Amino acid sequence: MKLLIVTSVSEFQKEILNIFKMARIEAFSRSEIDGCKNPNKVIATLSWFPGEKGGNESLMFFSFTEKEKIDRLFELVSEFNEKLETNNPIRAAVVNIENFI
Image 1 (tube, one colour):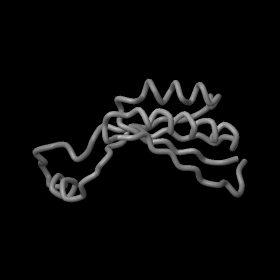
Image 2 (cartoon, rainbow, N blue to C red):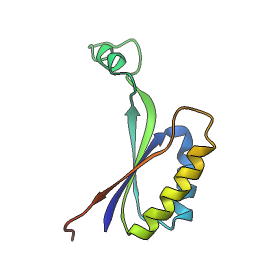
Image 3 (cartoon, rainbow, N blue to C red):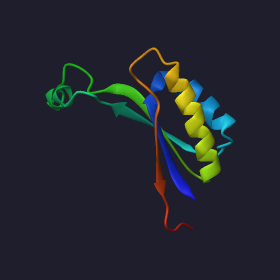
Image 4 (cartoon, rainbow, N blue to C red):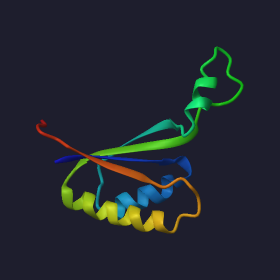
């Protein structure tokens, strides 16, 4: 069992859901997050009344799943990112789980 974490801009939600389906990862969670690339912009928006939003609307998906499904997901994400015309690729990471209940 491994922990899969996938992040992207919110515009790719439909594509990510399709990738999860094709990889046969049916149980996962999703959370809305702010994606940030420039730390100076984030620091500038930490005032009481910021004039602009601190980051980009992004999503984080995570799932406890098997290695074989993760391998397929990584293939699909790589294919998606190769065709991407923006500078916002889907990112994925895997964390080993020592114990779980």
